[in-house]
Length: 176
Image (cartoon, rainbow, N blue to C red):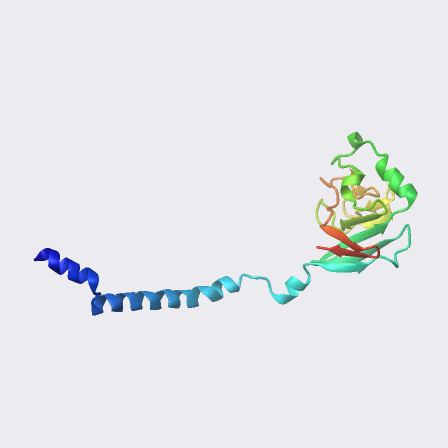
């Protein structure tokens, strides 16, 4: 007789089983409704997402000039390098650099250098076309960078950072 009762119980769920399933389902939905806003609030807001990338028209930048644009709240230096600046950057022996990195690895096109304009020592903003290497000079602590944004002297531990960027046309760069 026990087998017959087990078979009947397996065949037809009782009213109590249906209530357990309904209560469990309601609990899962309620937990999801509570947790969803907590997860959604961790996403960046619209103004931050809008700063994720920026396009810059480089057609108006004359050769030898540096333009500063803002990206993600940081200054980005875009330098239209002359042939002499390109040659000077390429001819530097890597053994002379505190943070050795060839110029070709820092640029997509030799005439355009794009770097984040924040000193890698303490986050100051270096000034352009200054210092012994005609690159950037950080007046706060004396770090000197060359025309490729590489650290040459001073307390800065590394080169100016190169952001992710791409040429979307001959006259436009997309940073980010």
